[in-house]
Image (cartoon, rainbow over all chains, first blue to last red; front, side, top):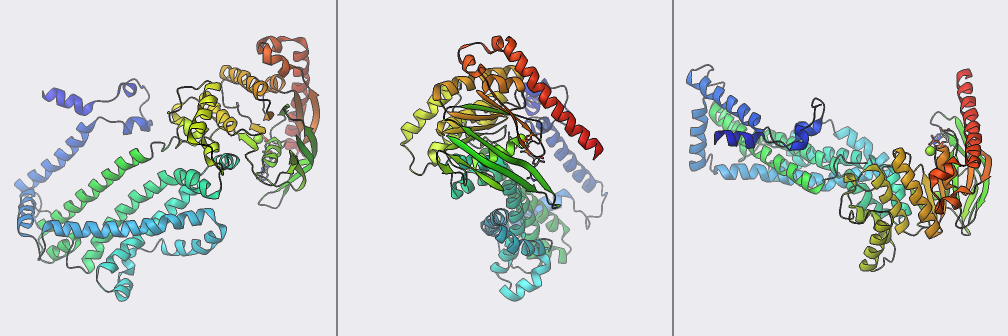
Length: 285
Length: 267
Ligand SMILES: Nc1ncnc2c1ncn2[C@@H]1O[C@H](COP(=O)(O)OP(=O)(O)OP(=O)(O)O)[C@@H](O)[C@H]1O
Ligand SMILES: [Mg+2]
């Protein structure tokens, strides 16, 4: 039985099994199957963690034993932390990330198209985008707190900024990559400007917009934790910050792992959506 | 009818150099004529086609199609590109029906899908309508491009090396298909190619263009397209009159290419 499970985990489609040249063929790397290596690597890391705790290889202050973290998870999951349940902490962080991300998309994507499609818009917005883009949102925290206080809107605004520039640039790059022959062809096939935008340029830019979404989602997670570290009554970042003040490394590590898991789950969701929504990705003829 | 009147085109490079891509090109093409254009690389063939299509504004002269001066792209002048102009986010069917669907006053859906099916059948792609275009071979993709152009019913079809990316055998089949479609639809066609045989087989008229400045060096009137509608193209290609013109044209293009190379070595 074990053998069958292993075989199923390692299964590849037959087309790929027949390939002789494998090094450099990306379709082989991305093909289904080979999950056994994923499980092996996770198992190895967990084992290392368990052993290092059991044999006291590292000072628990620097890295707690797995049992401590598990214990904290149970405690916090049942009793909550600082006047909020664990789910509330996770929920508020997710809420902030999603709000900032969505607002960033709603402004960034049209801005990216404007940058790519209109010379005047390009000349107006290009310096603005290029000026703000390299600025880490965290450096703006003091200003944003002055403007918007320490409430939700300040944090969401920071996340919005984090997503905005990435989305604008990804969209611009995607729109600019449109093969002019496709645009010409569409014009000779009755299309007007609006149809060219929505039926040619937009679908052409979608793969890069999606990449931008995944990148900005990652950046938003980094930013939300940092923003919550500075000023928040709730959220995973706040949990990490308070715990670190009390040297409760186990809670810090728990928080880090929870964030990674949630962010990873969202990324997997986005990858699935990507395959569903843009099957033509990378297939331009 | 297409009238090209004294067209000249000078490109400005970013370094402010001027490239004379076309100089005083004039010709008239009657409705239903099949014109092929040959010439060494860089002699302005694509430029000429892009001006007729309405993508580029000439620096001098104008193109007039059916009495109207060309001032922009129009569904009356369809284009088949060398490759890469299919919309890969649409199925074969959606590509072919794109023109009719984008019309200002689109026909009823049933009529559009009937028309789409007709053209897919005609180019030999019945049953492929639901496929994504990237799952088709290069030759099939070019047939989709052709069907998409024809489904929009343009009066003039412009083709810039439409078969350039295909293997020899597929290419020959496609040439047969082009002749058949030309004969059946009576469309006016301009086709650019680098293959001398293709130009001779397909064109009722042939322009051989010369570079720097781009101009029409020689014009031929050819019997082979008419003949090819009924006859086997392999037979025509073996005929002595075909071979003779072929060698003449090849010689002409060769000497032009050599002149270009020589100039580059000097310069
Ligand atoms: N956008 C441009 N800017 C400057 N020069 C250009 C531009 N487009 C074309 N040219 C020049 O104009 C001349 C004609 O170009 P064109 O593309 O029309 O040639 P062609 O006959 O289609 O060549 P090929 O057979 O290689 O496709 C060439 O010398 C080319 O370098
Ligand atoms: Mg060309």
